[in-house]
Amino acid sequence: MLNIIDNALRDKSYYICLYDNNIYIYNYECILSFSDKVILVKLANQNIKIKGLNLKIKRLEKVELLIEGIISGVLYE
Image (tube, rainbow, N blue to C red; front, side, top):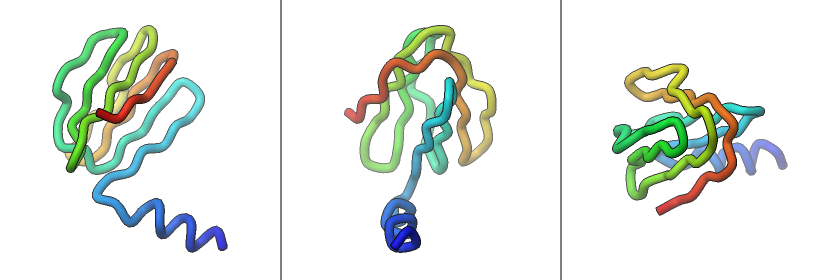
């Protein structure tokens, strides 16, 4: 059963994982804007807005993005 759920979640052009004070985004397209309170990231067919405090980009790779800080909200736009 968990394999079915995992496959359904990963059957996207991107995926997002939330951890304590971190958010990991795989296969993002670009960072549209960022500050220490809001980071706007472009995904394949929508944007994601991460809100919080003391936000910083901890890891920036071609397809991987790790954001650290006190995350208060994640919105799809």
